[in-house]
Image (tube, rainbow, N blue to C red):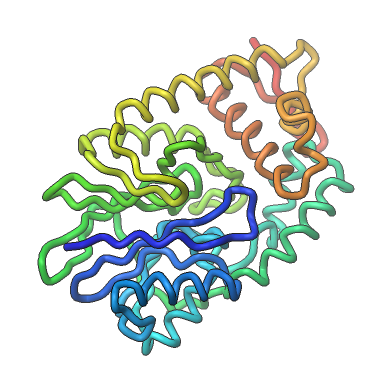
Length: 319
């Protein structure tokens, strides 16, 4: 059962995104790239090098629903004679754009983000909608944790690995402990715990960083030998990556706690101190706020900070 990696260009700072073909029946594409002519051209060429056409694809599986991973899903489905689409039920990016709902605005407001900054973020992500097509209910099937994707020559187990997004999934071929991890595990980048609505209660915030740490341990429990990530090169030493991630997260957590003052600070104020240049960068602003919120939420769960709600805004201070 051959895995064929294909790198596709994106308009994002992260660079190319990796999509994967499982060359077995049913022919399966994992992730699709963004909805751009450049990505579509690169995908066609990458498939062609292996004697495959888009119309040969029978199944499209999404690791998560960010634009660089799911943008071409409907275009490919239609050209591939209605290939079946699979995504986890906790993903929402395929249903509506980022920051589109009033609940998103409330999350940002609770983080202490000023209205003028919110307006910039919202306007920036409005343009993102051009890079993907939303899916309606009934246009996809659900990935279930620990279920299997069946092929003629074996199976890949579905691992729900939330953190980067609530519905992020990885896939493991247990016969050789090969993993396709999406953005859960990347060789040269620490994935961002993106600020997200709770998939069970949209009035709450998803505890992205805490869930991400559980997901890293979950992947580790399978002792993976080879990990294909959503960006960059494959990983052949998961233990090294795992311990590096934990060390970096611990260091960032300590930094966040050191920045808090006795009067209390918002997540936005922490983001400004952590990433002073990012708030003025359209591509980094939301990620900086997500990072701050993720670490503050985790610190609260660990009993390291107190949170007080004042006029709809959360203020954090150390005990």
